[in-house]
Structure formats: structure tokens, C-alpha cells
Length: 131
Image (cartoon, rainbow, N blue to C red; front, side):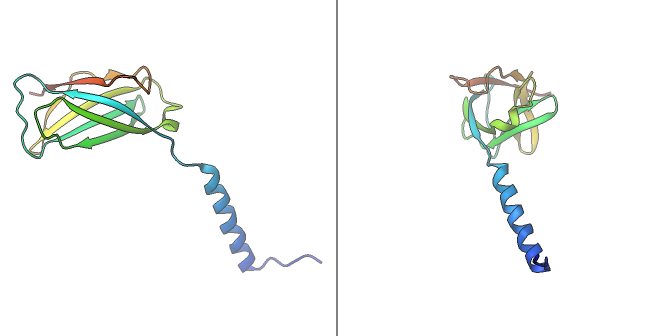
């Protein structure tokens, strides 16, 4: 009357359940923040420099991007993030760092609060030399 649950049927049922649950999880909902990173006056860029821009909250980083700037700035940067990651985030902040020849040489003096995740105009971040 009742079918016997064989190992093969159990395996197929497990795979089917896994596929259903994976479909429910959904995919990331990406959005972008336009940013303009400005260098200090009289700045000279060293070849192979690495510019990083980070979006974070009190719990840590939420998104980060890295570019290799090719001139002395300002540098346009687009930071991609998953909107779902911001749902529980508090006090979003943007910051930037610049490494040259493997050393951290410049950073934003203070992180900039992001009031709206989709600003109309690029957000400016000013790098200052580290001593």
C-alpha cells in the first residue's frame, strides 16, 4: 500500500528540496554608488598604486571596491553593493585608502556618512597624507 523509502528516493527527495530552497534564497539585488575620490594638492601618483573605497556600518564592511588609478586624480569610482545587505545596516559610512609601493600613504581623515544609498550626484571623498 505505501511505497518503501529507498536510499535512491531519499537522495532524490533531498536534491529536490535543496533546489527548492536555493530558489527561495534569491539572488543579490545590486545597486551602485557613484563616488569621486580627490587627492591632496601637489599630489604625485606612483605607478601600481591601489585605491580602495569601502562602505561600512558599525558591524563592519558591507561593500568594497579596488581600482588602480592612472593619474593624479580626482578618480571616479563606482561602488557596487547588495541592497539586501543594507536592510539591517545602521549609519552607513564611506571611506577610502590609497596604497603606493605596498605602503598605506593616504586615507580619508574621517569617513563620510551616507544618508541615502542612491545619491543623485557622486559623493566626494578627500584623501589626506598619512604621516
